[in-house]
Amino acid sequence: MKKIFKNHKRIMMSFVILFLGILFIVSSYAWFSTALNVKIKEFNMVVSKNGGLTISFDAINFDSSVELSRDILINEVAETYPNHINQWALNGLTPISSNGISDGSSYFFDIFATSGVKYNNRRRENGFIYADKVVDTKPRSYNSYIAFDVFFKNVTGSPVPDNLYFDQDTSITMVSEENEEMRGLTNSLRIGIVKVGTLPLDANPTDIQNMQCQEKCEAIIFEPYSRNHSALSRERAEKYQINLLDGKTFPTYAMIKAGGPIYVKDNVSGSPNLDLNYFALQNTIHEEDFDKPLFEIPDGITKARIYLWVEGQDIDSLETDSEGADLYVDINFVKDTVGYETFN
Image 1: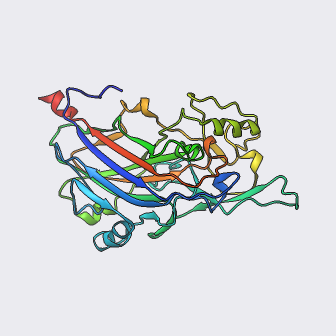
Image 2: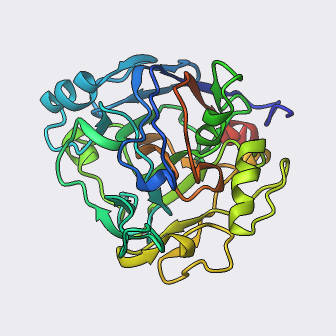
Image 3: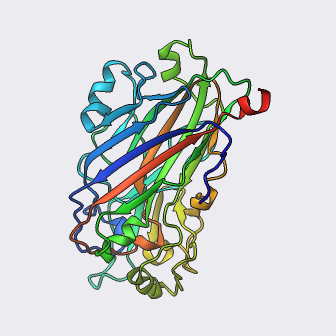
């Protein structure tokens, strides 16, 4: 992919996440199983300090390099950001489903989970689930996903807002490509980011921390491997009369409403039986969209929230049976300085 905005000054922000010790047990309809998890051992965030862009977890302490862990994200940040609602997955990421924010009034993703498949008879036929909406009201170390607030300090003096992009190196990769079972879960991971708003550089940190959407929140969901479908995923999709083609994007219908009973045969994305009362198309961006801005970051401090999760409604996470694998996640941001180019 060509580098975007070649004539502009650019800021590269790299997030490197190392996932180790991923443990799976035999499970059908993977996102209905609470036993399925992705354990996280190491999480590093690096921000290349160039052109006046730095990052913080509390809108007070900005730097170009930070180490992220449960203790830092949940406990230590509470000393300077006492009302944060960050989430960590100490016991591992468990498949959930989210279609992002439902409107611009809240910067929290609508997230749905289920406690497992239930049956009305001993033959275990016509399995169904009840879905619950996950509502975060306080920090949690043991959650099914990771979510945390970040603050971008942009000191440019540009007369117009700069643009923030995902760079071409943003990706989720598996350390060992030999484990085909894990490939489906790799293809099902999502990265979400919500822009809340921006306040001046000299604003009170408490005001920045407590910034709300004012009906203007913007959300992006990145699907790194929308076109990748393993042979095993394609085989399993055939059970639901789905012709899954490797190299072609397959739409995900994420959950949008709690309730039930929702029968398993009525929940599979792409199935003719899909119950549209509970599911809607998940609008995601892919690598070919990296030349389009995620959102604007004016001169000031911009509050955002980042999510990382396994999307259970992805066609590639129908069933999983794996002994484990290691994953790397790289999230790279590029910032242009369009104002300088336009007005200088």
